Image (cartoon, rainbow, N blue to C red; front, side):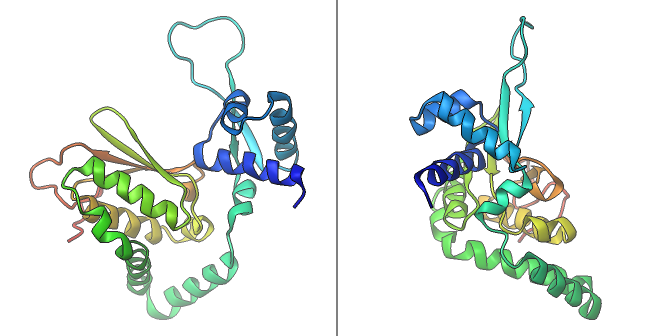
Length: 227
């Protein structure tokens, strides 16, 4: 990869992990000139690997156009791996056809267990849901999900900026459902999935409240138990 290609890849990775972002924010994060960043962003836009949206206005409405934010498209995320998607979809379709929906559900649960079990001790070390959410984000990042947390109101938002199985989950939402239930069990609190890449959102976002209502420990937003 050329130096130009490496820089463009870093711009794309930053949008993956922290987007939507302004061109100025990208330039500051990477320590390169805004002119160079705009050249790379224009190239990503031209290749349909990125798209733009207007930043939400804060405070009184002022003059001028809202700031433009950049984020990756599904094609842009493909830079970071959607390997064997077609094969995986075909295999799960075959499983659903010959073994039924319960088998698909069992597969989804086994897959997410294999993903998080190696990190269980690190995640459950603390009794604080916020600490657990941060540890879960670290574990998910190590597994390729580019995850982070941020404080929002009375709780945390767990954001997964990349999903290696997004194309498969778009057809088989059982993957997302099993993941959400596993998160609730690991975090020891009710969680609510707000958005998913599989449904076309910019990131998979899960709300983790600071405290769980009585009787809700280990439950997901659809009311199912995760014990």
